[in-house]
Length: 317
Ligand SMILES: Nc1ncnc2c1ncn2[C@@H]1O[C@H](COP(=O)(O)OP(=O)(O)OP(=O)(O)O)[C@@H](O)[C@H]1O
Ligand SMILES: [Mg+2]
Image (cartoon, rainbow, N blue to C red; front, top):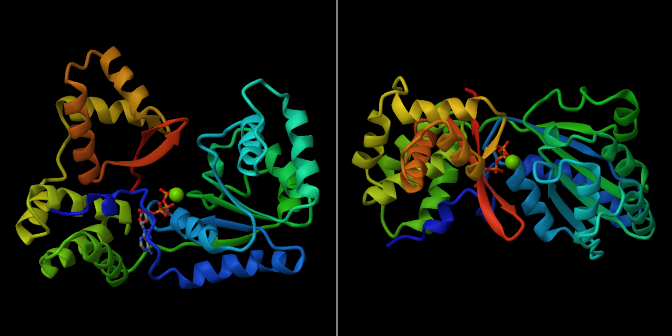
């Protein structure tokens, strides 16, 4: 038996290895808030699966300042973003559609006598960029952390927004193969009573080859575990899967995802069926898992309202 949950991508471990410098930089930027001084904003960027989100969530867990985390992928418009921020500040805005401007005013009112640490993840997905302007101008006592895969995400903003944010850029670089090993070992120690360390080394090397995307590594461990344990043969079985030419329904699914930047599992299933796909939902899910292990796709868990869903996108390597 093993504790699968520790291998899920949305599990955030208490201790994040090899990100001490990045954690410190963010804390230093936001730190002045503690003494009622104006903080610095930070723009965090870097490739997929290398700890950007995890680091910020980890800081929030123990930061003494009121902290909010919002993934812009789920809140793309200014109105929905501000009502989510207000909700997290304890001010429910209900379901009736309060106009955007009114929500901003409500936020400005609240921000006047609070200190806030706000993390906005996946800012590329934010459609109303003006929201960033409103946020940065609301008060001197708001520290923003903006996260993106795209190093150019900031320069895409217009000058007025850029100059009001003036974030310090903080690049997350991919982990070295040794660092990947440490991170996966840490997780394996939580999950398995016993395992083969050579298998872990191989998993680390494969993960490193995949851009050090820890999500990929965790998925490898999970697949191995489901095949019977973290053993060399089970990892090899995954490794041996050729970087194949995708065919049949694998190709169909891949193409459907390629047409979009991101797609939720529900949307994907609907598109697949519309395109004449005949596999059962359960089988489709297996195919998608396999595409992740092969390094074609990445998936993230998102909570949407009451449930959870997976969002798929093409893995750029
Ligand atoms: N240093 C680390 N120590 C332990 N776990 C880590 C570390 N870095 C990443 N992880 C784990 O790897 C997974 C992916 O990390 P995270 O979600 O932070 O990636 P990301 O950089 O935000 O990627 P994306 O750009 O795709 O959103 C998470 O499950 C996270 O807990
Ligand atoms: Mg992330």
